[in-house]
Image (cartoon, rainbow, N blue to C red):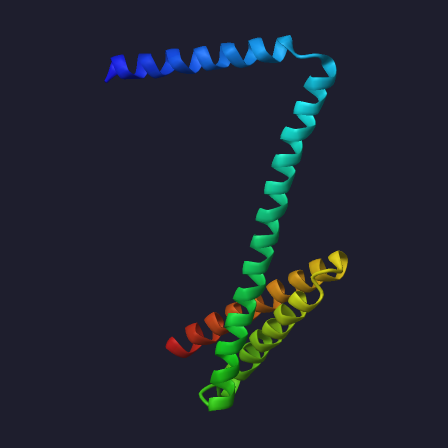
Length: 135
């Protein structure tokens, strides 16, 4: 086990050394081009990941909105439960609006924030009501 770890460390050092040797043999223009390329790759990766995260947040708001809408229209949300269920439905509608306004970056960001607040508020309200009814 230790021998394998030592071998892996040696290989890693050799790769690092060969990379440094290649980097040192490059002209300043080639170095700048390599740095720009690497930064561009990481920027693209970050942009794709943040867009996927935003889409998942909006889809979660839509999911809770559909569930609460079904519950409200079915009639199982009665009494005080209707308030947080309506809040969840509004969060779902705002989540749909996010997908419609995705090209407008500022509006999409605000819609996502509002959808998140509505979903969190609705779920918190449901938890408080369930706790009060359970006691």
